[in-house]
Length: 542
Image (tube, rainbow, N blue to C red; front, top):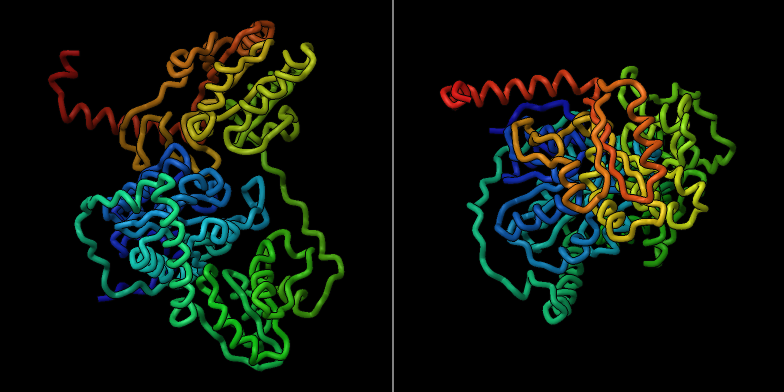
């Protein structure tokens, strides 16, 4: 019996579909706008876990799929850059269980350092890609993605964008949850060990799979035609299809649900019935260029509309060739570090000491804004350490000794550990100072756990990485921990000393996030209560 209709965001719809698809494991790394998928999947009763980074999440997902289990892997668009290494080879392999990778793109950079268009990955890695237009399609295409994955034994990318992730529409769930067989490993060395002797024929099999999927997409893919007059035909993907229906209800519309490989014959037939053909797509002109390469002439959007999200009003402007300057949006209140945030004290010290700060991705990136303006670079997750080392290697000594790398606790686990290894292996002549701002959570994306908190996604106790012990084991010469209950001036005195040394140094500035601290106390008390209930006599003896 089918469930009642529900009002769900795209993220929530994907989580519900994963539950109904029989997904046995959800892995990922938190990143807006994808974070709520695994959190919802966990809340619904699915098994979900945060990985240290997206590469590890995909590798864990691959292992589960090799074992015959349906697996969901989630990340934001820049996270796919981190996971690209396994992705490009994973498509060569044959999966036993379905694997769906959710890439949540962020046109307009609501909470990101770039607005890359991950449709490019579909073509580059030769991986099928589906793009829903709303929550109902997010649910339906998630289920379909698992079917495609298992039919062709290949990973499938579900590409969503910020507006689909967070907007809510009615979802009518399917009737029967999928009952997947128990996971079981069957050896298949030629299909899963990608040495050249096996990878060469695997590449040929991959191209055959993509050709077969293209034929299927033309015959019965998730592509929908909305009738209208022949004067104007629109081909659209994702949220742009929703905007197109509102902006031009009189037009014929072809919504393409599987955007790689494209249903070119379906598009060709549609184009033949239109006097004017316009392609509407957020981000790069991926679709319009693909049509041009296939000999299907179509109008794309002007270059100015390549930036930011599309809206109904922007779609109207595209359709009417209106290229007058767009209204300047009203200025909003700039973001700032929370009052009482321990990062404030750190950036005050760095500012007052006139340090050259190589920064990183997290809420502490706001240290670049007034009144601190104490961050000089920010590139990607974990880059602070490498960038800081590069500056140290080449700058005159008086400048080099002012360079400090600043990174958050979750970001350090994500991709800062290898930077620390680089510092130990190739230390600059002036040494270097790395600061981990440890607030006990992944604060920027909503206070998620990570391997440095000692708690799982579900907030249960688990193993914990101790940053200072790790640094000592790796060979960092000076390791210090500063608590913000310490005497005023402690951090400044410590930094002044370390910056004069030609040695490698790590400072862990530790203070719980002011927003997460009450939750952390609650989780710790709950864990202690469970331990007390499990072995009261042992605790009493201790």
